[in-house]
Length: 218
Image (cartoon, rainbow, N blue to C red; front, side, top):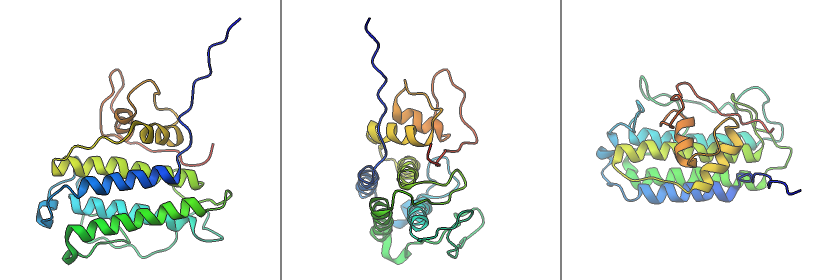
């Protein structure tokens, strides 16, 4: 009797995956105008503009790196960096780019924060854990969170700036497998990731409103 082969899993999210996602995202944004005024348009369906959304992404990457850093990380809260909100409805962040440095400076900030998280994922001990409200994560979970933030916020910014953004299917599939265990596996991975994060439609499925991931190790 022959048995059907076991379905293949996409594999873990790695530091190399995160580095590739950030590298591709920065390369995409370098195609846009260097006029910071052009980045004041809304980022897709978000209330934030494109500049603020890239700052928010950089802040996410920095924060996930910071959570992996302490020898005795906080078990029920984030590392207590000062957070600021520049205005009503704006992102609440630690990381901001100097406006006078222009778009090139903004992308340097994004690249630097991405490199911090990549380095932390590469060097974190297997038992390292990073608090997050959606599940205290190991290094792989932290890489996956950073990668999802990168992929979907690049989608938001690309919509605002009129750029085309379709990341590699493998990055999307591995992110879905790690953080969205209930997501369908027989659909296009990029379309599925957009659906899972409330940004797109999947045939035969209701659009997602409030969404979350599951970052604790399974």
